[in-house]
Image (cartoon, rainbow, N blue to C red; front, side, top):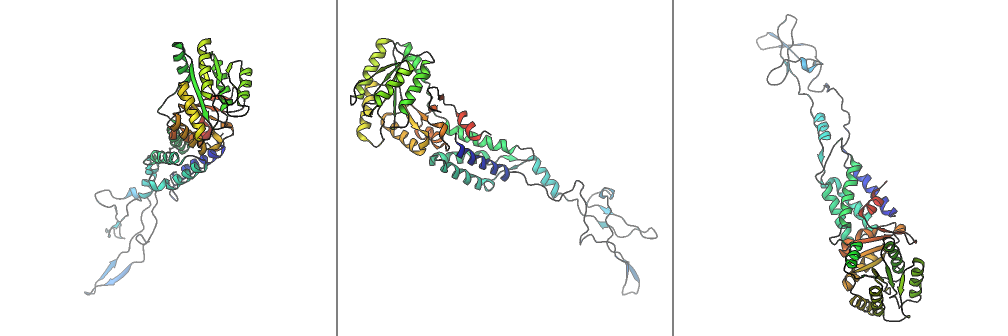
Length: 397
């Protein structure tokens, strides 16, 4: 799952690790040494200079610096090495240079840490932006992730003891976790239990594009609910598609649940109404209403879907999207939300999705949470959505 995006994020993490790592100190030694340069040349031969009065005066050239600076005379000002002549007279003192401090300061900065600047990470952010867009992440969501990573890295201090891989995982993980969050929390089990406490069935209507796994997802959710002790009835509201009714009927037989159906071409809203009445009469807990798959641009079918929702008065409208379609699934979810107000999303075919764009984008674009992920063809291949599933798939080793 998400193999392509995972590899791209791995490359971004490696860039973070290499880019912000402290540079090694080159050419420094454990003990500071003094090099002989133009200002500290060896002693040259003593020359005599004749003054105007005719008296010879001894001129002294700089002496060799002593090897142990700590042996210098202590006191205020620079250290001075006194030098003695043959007769013991003190000669002119030689001023010793200060100990080199630049290497020490650099070493201290490496240990204590330096703050990351925008210049340090600008090319990393560019790589991340490209990786998101290539993986079909919606542009506003990609921008949001990049901005959160930027905020997480800027001003962070890195030093010798900084675990840069951990830092990269932390910053990227937090950015992705934020875009997967929804302000609207939806718990289908709690919705069903609350309705059962009132003696009424919970009604769930499923919408989406034809061929994206809607009917199969209804069967998977029926299995999920019956395993938890709920009594379910299916409403074959897809009266438009050839064999749509038969497909749901086969699922109902295999799962051992009730189904309410009419002939092909019948009013889908009437099928939903009959299924709800059946559930009330039999004391069933949940009505799962299938609808005809439709493109968001098909005005007639969209109007029919609005009628089904108006008649059924569902407790939740669930959009079923194909994760492999990437940004198309996100745009479809937004259109269905505008038409009937979806409660949440179930994404199918997650096991085959190498890009992950739909999973990262759909919550932020619609403002509604992902409820389940379809991970295979079996009835049990439906898992409750948790952000950790996406994070582990993208950032795990």
